[in-house]
Length: 119
Image (tube, rainbow, N blue to C red; front, side):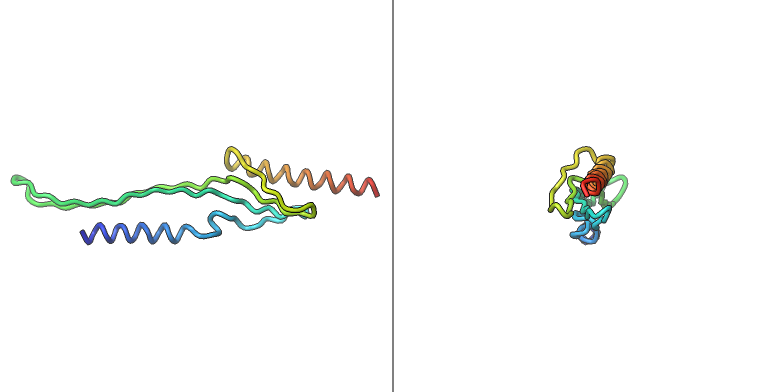
């Protein structure tokens, strides 16, 4: 039973190490006067087990193991600029994050060139 407790403690320790506010709220990125803050969804699962037994022909034995997996998926981006703050939903993962960055920079460049034409 001590082995199971050790495996469980180790697994929980690693999960705690991985999860913090920087995991779900990314570092701000400043592009063309826009501050982009990525938001991500974090999911994980794990299992721990151990056992022991005795077979009359093979003798006693014990065993244990742990396993797990996880994933991180971008879900939205907070955009902060002179016009205010908005949240842009992201559907489809990393490629969409890059598309949102390019789209936001493009909008900022268009607005900037439009305002300089008006002057």
